[in-house]
Each structure stands twice: as structure tokens, then as C-alpha cells.
Image (cartoon, rainbow, N blue to C red; front, side, top):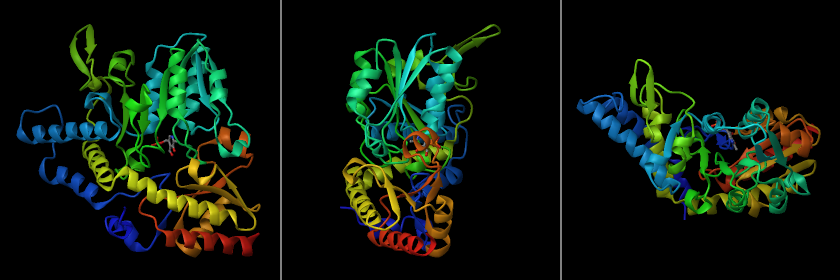
Length: 403
Ligand SMILES: Cc1ncc(COP(=O)(O)O)c(C=O)c1O
């Protein structure tokens, strides 16, 4: 079981008394991760994979070790399947721009996606004169649950790629990615999974899912900003043309030719975010030490509490599925209030941080929720029952006084 009070001591920001319910946007960073990054600057500050001197050797060793820790965290077969990126968006764009598309190819995605796993594919469709089908959630659509039957109907032999989020950033809905991957592979299509909201909150095992690509964000799983990862199945490395090439990506070059590395280094052009990537490795260790099962169990309790208590309030419209089908997100509106006003009031009156707006999910917002925006409170393992009590009571107050 998670000792939440002990865990909270690792997060300096929580000592200020703030109630942080915006981890879906970006999580807080614990001291052990900050210490690990500082260790790089204090003890072996040098470039990686470029020097024979001992500082560079040590930095390279730690940087490579971070790849191995991330690989272990998602059960990749080897650390050479992990590419350090800035964020999930960069990971998805790497695949979208790196595959060899043909006119008439088809992409299947869903209406539940974050823009980073939606507009990227729209651009590919437009550039290469392809088809794109976005599967709509089944009714009641505001739960964001995708039926496998609908996916089966959308994926055909022209489908080159299926791009699906593992967890909706707006509704929290968990998608059946293993089953979707199976359907896609039966038609010879690649599968890209947007793991931005799953990898921080549950055990994600790329071998069990069977996906070809998985992108996720370090900054949503206790790592610093600027360090994230893209998993590419080892046998597919050579099929993807890197977004950037240059230093670090080259096996050989002459005046009129170059040959890219065939392993993951072909994707890491230029000096990487070294301290941040080492921090990502430390974050993977930190979460693993807490136990992903313990994290999930604790979050499940908070999810149920948030969902059930907010649902009871007058004037509240709550979106998303039942707690058992989602991670710790409550997306809601309070009467006709502007969601930004609600979020600002929660900050000013109760020191509670939540996100408001369209949550970079406009296709879902416009076509399913049919509102310009909503409020999203999101819990992580460092949140407590009493913080959710305070959220519910502050929302009750807003509903009573402002609607
Ligand atoms: C589901 C999902 N996909 C992609 C992203 C984009 O992540 P990043 O900003 O790290 O690129 C987010 C960010 O909120 C997200 O929630």
C-alpha cells in the first residue's frame, strides 16, 4: 500500500499548501529526481557519446542507463527500442513524418484523441492524399468508450496505420489497446499508441499490448520537462526516416553521401537533453519503487470519490465513464458558468489548481461534449482524500453562489 503522507514529503511544492489537481497537464517532480539531475551538473557535466575523457564517459553511461530504465518501465525488449524525445507530440510526429506514405493509404484513429494524436494525422492525410477515419465513441458518446466492433468496421486492408490513445486526456477513459492492436495487425497496419495518460498511471507493457510504437511524456510521470520517450519496435527502426539528422545519427559520411545509424541513435540528432533524460530514468525508478499497482489502487479510490461526490452536486454536468473505466480524471461543467471562471475561482478561493478549456481535444469537445470547454480535475498518487473533499466543497460553494 502507498504511504501517501510519506510520499508527499518528496514534493517540495506540496509543502506550500497548494492542492495540485492538474497532473494530467503536467505532474510534480520529487526530490530524488531533482537530486539525480543536479548530480549530473555537480559531478559529470559533459556531452554524451562524444568524448573519451572520464566526465563524458560517466555522462554517457548515465544517459544510456536512463534508456535502459525507461525500457524496463514499459517492458520493451531492449533499451535500443527507446528514443529520447522532448514530449509525446514529438514522438508522434516522428512516426507521422518518418513513414513512407502512398496515395490511397488509410489511417484509422478515434474522436477521443488529443490534438497531438489527431491533427498530426490530418496533415499526413492532406499531404499524401489519403483517407482518415475517426471512430466515434458508442452511445452515450460522452463516456468516450470505443466499441471494438466499430473499430473492426473502420480498419480494412488499405489501413496503413491505427493511431489510438491509451487513455483519454479529457474523459480519462481507458481504451482496449491490446484488442485494437490485434485488429490492426490482422490487416497489416502499424499501431501507434499515445501513452501520455496511461504510462504515468498504470503498468504499460508494450510486449503484452503488441504495439509498434508508443509515445509518452516524462513531464507527466514525475520527470522534468523536456525529456520524454518514444518506443519503436526494434525491427521497425530502419523503416522510419528520422525527423532530424546530424551529429550523433551518422554511421558514415563523405562529401557526397551519408549513412544513418541503423539503431535508435539515428533518431537522437544533436546534443540531447542530458540532465532531463537522466531525470526521466530516475522518475521511472521512483514510480517503480512505489509500485504501479499501488499507484493505480490509490488513484482508483480518489477517482471513485471525485466521481461519486461531484455527481451528487446540483448544477454539475460530469463527463466520462464510470470510475472503473477511467483514470483519476473528473471533467465537468457547473451550470452555464465559463469553465475558466470556475478554475480561477477554485484557485483564488481554495488554492486548488485544475485545468479548464478545450484540453487540446476540440474534435471531441465539439462533436461529442458539444460545449466550448469544461473543467478538468486530475488526481495523481500524491493527492489525498481530504484534498478531494476540499475540491468537492469548493465546487459546491461555486455552484451555490455563482449559478
Ligand atoms: C493524451 C495526450 N496526448 C498527447 C499529449 C501531448 O503531450 P506533450 O505536451 O508532452 O507533447 C497530451 C498532453 O496533455 C495528452 O494528454
